[in-house]
Length: 220
Image (cartoon, rainbow, N blue to C red):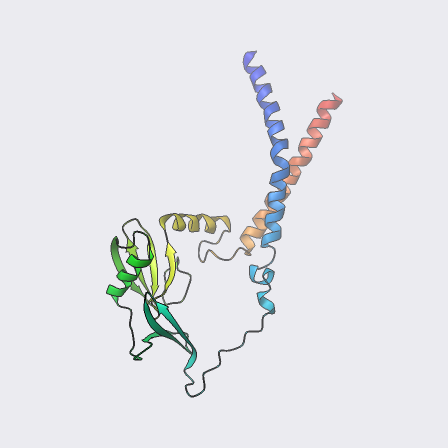
């Protein structure tokens, strides 16, 4: 008898909890479908931009951009070539300044908290960048003892990205969330759209059943 009363209470609590979460759950599913219905590039209006090819500088068709800046107290000039590669030069002398392993370590130590605690340094080419970088850029991967990865452009000496252990965990969860573990970028894919629609239909049917059950109880 006592057990049956508790089961009845549990059933009532379950119904009321269902009512409490039904509305936000429906809104969450509906808004999720709306956000993945179109590619994010189209939502941002990127498809409307007319992409113009880089124009070479007069006198040197291989160069499309020249930037001068002070990099860690040293004036440098960054030259971007037509193939997208970057090369760094000393502003005063024009001597090429290649980023070697020692400088990659120094950059991490000066620009990243705890960057002097280096575990390993590894080179990546632009053709085979790691998944967590998401950029076709030649980099040094400076791995710190706490699991942080600092990616330094091998041509310019600039930090391209910082990836912590928490970022990598978040990245996996994001891939699961949008059902794209391969690139972890395509939220507009058939899997997430179809399953979101199925979930929305299931939630709507559950809400209807809650109404019908409540009306039936009132009628009794």
